[in-house]
Image 1 (cartoon, rainbow, N blue to C red):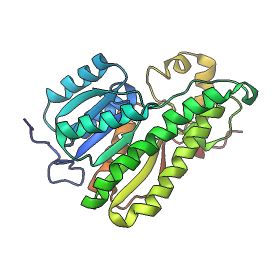
Image 2: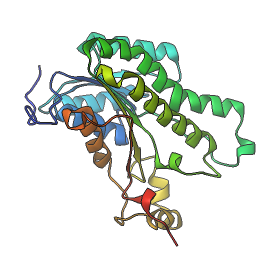
Image 3: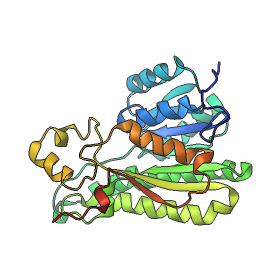
Length: 265
């Protein structure tokens, strides 16, 4: 049963839309799943672990707004991605919104230590999954002349790095892919954009947040003096998914408290 969204009739109304959120059960992904549903979308919550995905879905289904279903998938497995799409369509019909949030960050260190296997696995998770899902969903989006591809990137890919080689390389590739999709399919009603979070309070970032030296280094570039919250990324995603973002295409939006615009002396 669908419960009315408080945002019905507004620029942020997602009623009647279906969203697929990879990595949608934890951290930024969970906030995105919950906020898309709050604005009326039905949400396919994809997570690696069934229990976390089901917990997120139960929380969504207990509130007003769109409904949710929990599905698991390994984003580096093409067959698993195909099964994910099939399951989502069985639950809610055609998928209108893809939020490619799940990703891999499995190598820290110099480029000489970045093996082919590490690079390939990282590319599978951070670029090829986006490509495979987009390729599978675009035909239906084009036929309906409406679709949203939202890639969750990182501000780390806006800079050079001596430690995050495979991660930033794969995220940078995904950003360019999104621009290409925006150019190729913009006139068909598709909007493709990237959101690049800065430091956000998540389980993945907790180690850095708890390290006074590392945190001070991050905060030196912040223009707001704090790290972000998952909802602050979800809000940008809701805007891009809704009519409010209908004239935004091919962009990379840094949701980072101004870290990418501050020159530190």
